[in-house]
Image (cartoon, rainbow, N blue to C red):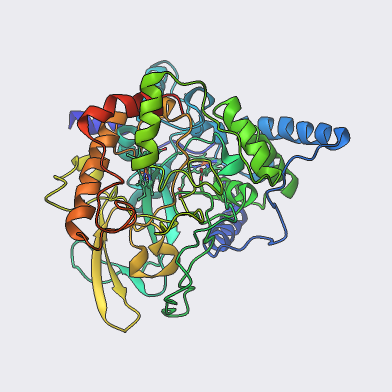
Length: 473
Ligand code: HEC
Ligand code: HEC
């Protein structure tokens, strides 16, 4: 009971009182969000132009965007008092660590002793574990405090149902809550759709649509969010305002443009900023964003290029969020991957994870293309929620690794506390791949020819160098 007391607080009313109309227009907004409706012509990722007038305008937009990013009381939009910066904390490389959540929570409880009305809008019922049961009275913030995870509500594809954990029967609800980390916003200028290969899924063999669902899903060449479901920062910001800040009226388009302009000025280093300028200017040769490296870090870079860059580093778009698909690459890598970060994880390579993360797993029932019915259990189905295809189960977009030394913990569910733990995870992952898809059919992730294990796997004696390099990214 002690733990329970620590992580729950009495419900608090949001800073704005919703009127009935506000609530119902919010429902409509939420629905249109889950349907993915957004003005298509809006918010292309344009490079900041060179002429001085346009540069001044871009700077002004970024300044307005910065203000909007920090603004808690979007009163005219009827929000819940949250700003973007409440989750994407500037002091945390624009992400949110469980440690920061915990210290804000403790501080809030301390302030509450003096002042009953003390508030921190990070803690809103919509992100409480018991929100679906207790609504605005919800108060159990375990996922937020223990894991740094936030509720992301996704619409279920027509062929997928959640199973009731008690009766094991399909439930009527057409949505599911998954719990995801708040990613850092550095370098988002180059981590959206990149227009380069590979495409997901590959054009052949063609997939069969099930119950009218697009079998390929949106953004087949990268996008924002761990499942790449958004194509632009504007589309992303609109969704964030609706789901996290609970606004009840449509946000002005200019504000979305301003937020995007601001976020495109956030870089993890001047090297990445130079790289971004080259990419956005359409260059075909790219500057190396790495700083000057010492001998150990240079060795680490060789290890990275062998073991990680097949996914985290394409020559056609050399951030660290685009997989390799260069013309010299004979065995192409896929765009999206299941690196076994969801729970439960397969034995014998993985043991059971901590209960605070294992408990987020749900069991689903899926109707396959051939009409048969199957079930799967996962804490986050990833791209499957966008396509209804079992092949997309647990598939995630490849995240940017620049600045990674400052953004622990790691993975979409914050399941690796340190870079060491992250490498332990990959060791188990590569072992699992080698066991389940053995030579001579070794996948491109592990082998350049299907037989030799010449990619993946980091040797124990290579770790120190790799970590030294990762810390300089
Ligand atoms: C309640 C916490 C919360 C708030 C408030 C919030 N975000 Fe986020 N943000 C998240 C989470 C969680 C994700 C990851 C969701 C996913 O992958 O499905 C995310 C993802 C993003 C991404 C995608 C980054 C990438 O690399 O793909 C961007 C950009 C972003 N947020 C911008 C914003 C902006 C702009 C605002 C304010 C309008 C905002 N966020 C408000 C929690 C929050
Ligand atoms: C098969 C493709 C693939 C390979 C190989 C790969 N990664 Fe990843 N990486 C991913 C995907 C996909 C994710 C997102 C998974 C998640 O968030 O749960 C990811 C996530 C990460 C993250 C977490 C980033 C964050 O912000 O939380 C780190 C760190 C990372 N990888 C480092 C590495 C290192 C180091 C290597 C080499 C030892 C490597 N990766 C090899 C695909 C790959």
